[in-house]
Image (tube, rainbow, N blue to C red):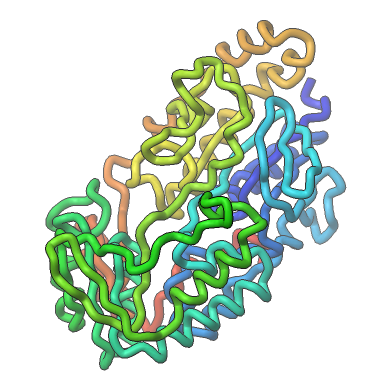
Length: 428
């Protein structure tokens, strides 16, 4: 049975997806020599999104953020014919195959979804090629350099981190952070952590305005028929809208408290969007319980990281895209989830799920239920280390150990946002 042909498709080539691929490659060496692995990613190269905010102020750093996938599947310097990289955008998930944007189909026995989250207001996160990404980075970096007064709308980790980077590089600029909630960062983090972050920002000369939602100056782009411009036919219009957002010009915004904020560049870091549109065509066993949570847009999963719908024990969702709490939306958690998902996937292989499902879905379901899977929650650390960086030399952490070692960390000349680990992960 271990010598049967098994095809695993992993969608998403960031921390979670690449780690899952690495674990699967190891599994093919040890137990399943005919295991075929396909990594599907819409970008031509790995884009180090973890260092997104550093790349917006540091061109040399930005140039290192693109890493080819060519070495990922090398085995002793030789490409393994059972494994491949497919550059394509996932369009739809079906019961036994996925459909990509060009209409092609990739059949799977097991599917791992690691498609992540994007920020529509930060166009560099949506670029598919290195050239396009560099062009967008250049546009955004030039706007930051030219602006004198910058407004940050939203104060999650991305907004605060970018504000800290700009405050350190351009201390002469007037920076304002406006946040709808009464404290900074995600609501699941402690009040003390949020207050310390606020104190550090104010020390850097940043004006912090809490409990004030900013009213957008311009409406979202609409297509000619009045619908939102999310399709590829309106991508040019959407890109032009993003370019306008990153144009330095006098602007005035109102807040929900009736105040006015003037700036010449507004950076919106609200409205992060999980990539889950592809789940709409996958039938649900219970129509009252869709695969994607309406409130969050994330894929609903069981503690084993399988889809919550028992009809699909062979589909896993890991990283930013799943319904785990916000405290699990960090690179270290993505890596842990990927390793756990592959452990569970192996148990399904050991039970012969992929073999049995071709003979009898009922028999396959019984084998899936028999697999002794452990819940991911039992492997979670009691307290995840969360670090918010404010430039190269300042950080705030939620753990006592990290806070105690802050003095040593801050004496280092640079903070590289795990790019060295990303290069190692991709065998560079």
